[in-house]
Length: 225
Image (cartoon, rainbow, N blue to C red):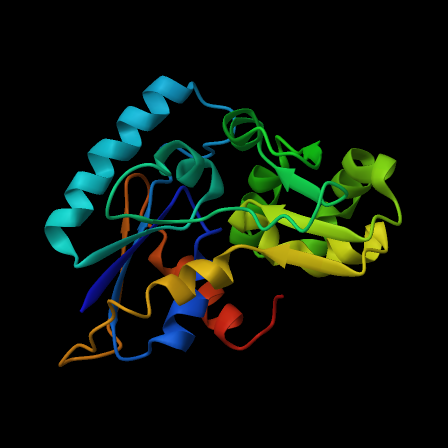
């Protein structure tokens, strides 16, 4: 069985790593729509058209399609056959950290923090090989109104790379992530492949396979999270 994992960039690698761990006998195609990165502030109509086009292409090449992006998932949540992400909200006091488009589309009934530049900062930092701690200044400036919040929900897969940073800066007691539920939802349809464990990458823009393989290995070794 071949599973497609779709995101604008490196964020979906955090979901990919969980899928590989849960279902190691499957093949994976990771499609990074990096020519359109980032999704968070793009015109919703044109973004949805782009998503639909790329997903139709992936359907022709794979057996199941995982949308490993909260922004894309919020726009495609009613599309039959796709496995999408939903933010995990504990109660109205949960702080959801997400992109402008995710917050605008979902209209969640909880506390929210709009973080329009965070995915870009994380992606450029990690692809350049810099220490992820360099994002701390942005996190502090953006989230300073929510110090000592108890529960934080991740609303962008890129943010999984900095969960420790978010937790430390806010002194949060727990960080929620909807990707675990998404991975569990695939359990009923997963069929092992005869040549299991094959992972390939495709890009809509620059081919950056080497960097994506490097980050995937770091995620599988539990370096982040």
